[in-house]
Image 1: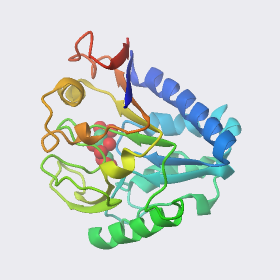
Image 2: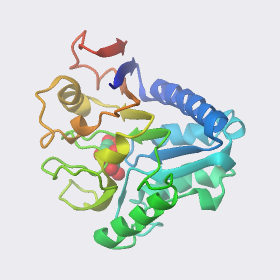
Image 3: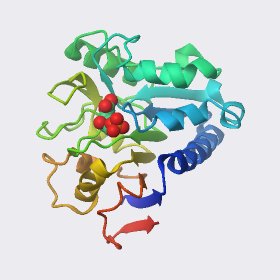
Length: 255
Ligand code: 6PG
């Protein structure tokens, strides 16, 4: 059964400060238990303030960068130095400022066409999985939410998958590159902790649909995310949380 917690904040800065503490706690705990911490990062603009915080004191000094392994929940199929690349974003605001070994960074190779990038990423995931498994059980997954209910690059209308680690995506999505590679719900749902970061009034309907909308996994892909043996967080600013009811059965809400 999934433990679901919603926590709301007055603004993105407060949300990011809480998220940074959560990252620190999860990483220290997983390093203490398993000697390393596996993290799947999100693209998009919402996590940028969190990445910026992690690159600064006190997190820069307190996080055990040498034992942290980084992946992405999805990547846009553009070269790694393209400003649209999620890897490029993390490299610029985070990795360039902290002592993370390059061999701990497992980026999807967005310079390849989606099918090739998915194949290569699947190979990298397997290389970090326990014996006999296809992907690592992530200690922490960060996800964003689109106003249309997408998460990672699982867009409305995308097929449901089972048991495969990643998919090649060719979708139309606003002004962003829509040729992508994405991890699948099977991977996200095996994680120990999954944290959605959601800010802005334009996300309010999608957040409500994800948590209390009619169950429709095709229309609202974020509903596919329910870690089976892990914890699911929704960290939202007040505007994003504005359409949530006061009580949601089975969900702890802290406002
Ligand atoms: C990406 C992510 C996507 C993102 C959401 C929210 O764009 O790279 O795959 O799922 O997290 O679209 O994006 P914002 O944080 O920019 O609103």
